[in-house]
Amino acid sequence: MAKPNYQFEKRQRELEKKRKKDEKRQVALASKDAGANDTDAAEQPAAAESDAPGTTTGS
Image 1 (cartoon, one colour):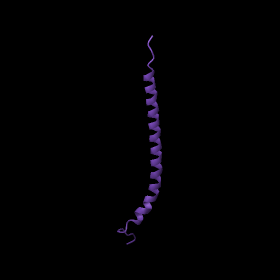
Image 2: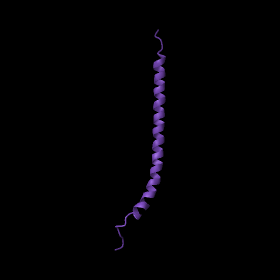
Image 3: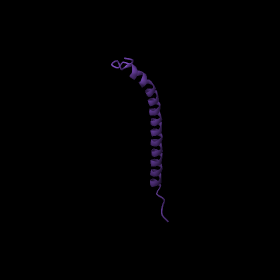
Image 4: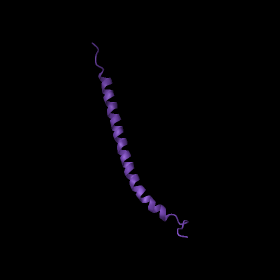
């Protein structure tokens, strides 16, 4: 009967934990970026309108 390779199994568990941790971190960063982009998008149109001194309307 073959002996179990505990080192290999441990390494596989560690790699799986690392992969899951990285995925979780990526999701957290994506949600953080999405939240930051929502607030930036709301502020940018107002800033863009006031930053355009060369354009006039109604002439």
